[in-house]
Image 1 (tube, rainbow, N blue to C red):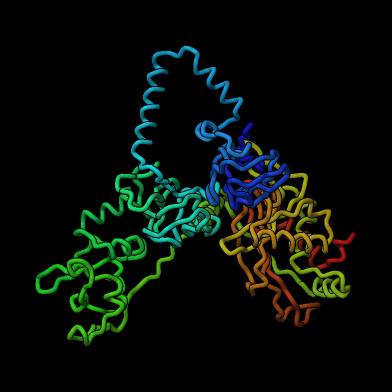
Image 2 (image 1 turned 120 degrees about the horizontal axis):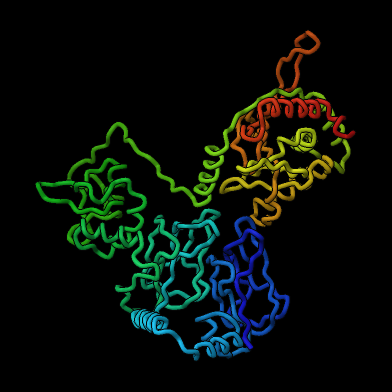
Amino acid sequence: MAEVINMPRLSDTMEEGTVATWLKKVGDTVAEGDILAEIETDKATMEFESFHEGTLLHIGIAEGETAKVDTLLAIIGKKGEDISELINGGGSVSEKKEEKKEEKKPASPKSEEKEEATSEASEKKAEELPKGVQVINMPRLSDTMEEGTVASWLKKEGDTVEEGDILAEIETDKATMEFESFYSGTLLKIGIGEGETAKVDALLAIIGPKGTDVSGIKGSGGEKASEKASEKASEKQPEKSSEETKETPKAESKDTVSSSQPQAVNDGKRIFASPLAKKIAEEKGIQLNQVQGSGENGRIVKSDVENFQPSAAGGQAYIPVGIESFEEIKNSQMRKTIAKRLGESKFTAPHYYLTIELDMDHAIAARNAINADPDVKISFNDMIVKACAMALRKHPQVNSQWTGDATRIAKHIHIGVAVAVDEGLLVPVLKFTDQMTFSQIGAQVKELAGKARTKKITPQEMEGSTFTVSNLGMFGIKEFTSIINTPNSAILSVGAIVEKPVVKNGAIAIGNTMTVTLACDHRTVDGATGAQFLQTLRQYVENPVTMFV
């Protein structure tokens, strides 16, 4: 009997999952314990193993696609088994039999009318889709993704597509991912051009038998943003050539010149040029009335401008002294998410900042002594993290959270350490930091940072922080402020160690100092409390031996 496998809930906060990779394909034999797929949550990618054995008969969620928890993920059963009912409705074979029994029960007239209407709509939808044609919509590739950007197409309209071929690279809020086809046929239509952004479920592409008319297919989500843009462009421009049609998607997203702007005029006649051609001409200082168009009805396209030679046109292009221009870089989905969350923190929690300068001479000496052991290597950041943990033990009010109705003071100390990754910032968490040694802190920070950069860190390893440390000292930054990592009440910004003249025992000497800034949420941490925390932190850092007591 076939077994239905649904999208699992891999963490207590998970509502959706993204299939990063399938380790099995349809038709493969699956044994109990085999890894079926790698599933990505909001913070990590986890291996998902099968608890059934048989043949993988169906894949319900393609690589790169996102679905709600409990959505049909796969079906495993006997080779050749009929699973059409399971695909349409989900559930096991036995559940289907129960559903059929329930269908025989008398139904109210209203429910019968609703069922008939739904049935008619489904039949009509099925009739509208030509035989063998598959509509591919913009997938949800992360749980926070609301829209995606097509970074590049690896196939173009008219190309033959095999199952497993990479169709496109799609940019989400987490990364740019390869999107693989699970169908074979001809790429009949591209619904979202390179550089264009569209909502999840917008028509991305159509694959089917060569020559099939798909002009009437709008996709499951109805009319999409990209289609509306195309329609607007078509209303304002004459009939397009095939060459221009291929260029238009890129041009609409990258050109700063709107297609609705007045066209260049030559001897009172309108000059037809693609938006991309106009943009390139503007950047190169080329007058479009000197360019001979090779497109339909003499339309000027990209290649005409790129290959333009002033002598061939009987004149010289005007080259201005300077050109005002902007480079527009689309915001990645991760950057949008970071902006949203930091904005919520900054404008919800009333921030204030306290800054002190630490004498690092003893800390430098202590670190050199510890690192003299060839089996041990600690960093100044490890010492700062340990000092923060011990200071939090003495000032629990800083180790708190604001809930509106109450202030929650954590009895445990979990310090988050900000780690920069290619697409933004992640914060691995060191659990029970106050109970860890310098070397344990250093080893765990190194391990978690490596996982964060390769996106192998688990959600559990990034949850539950009660305080955060952000260090930019390794970049030579002397002093900075950070935005609080909610729901924490404070974050410490750590600058670089600077050698400079200082006053010691009434005389000027060369010393080493480090500036740290504490950002506090004024709702939970009063100014005096934050200042006392920094004084305790100073005692630990400037006299590292006290951290061993």
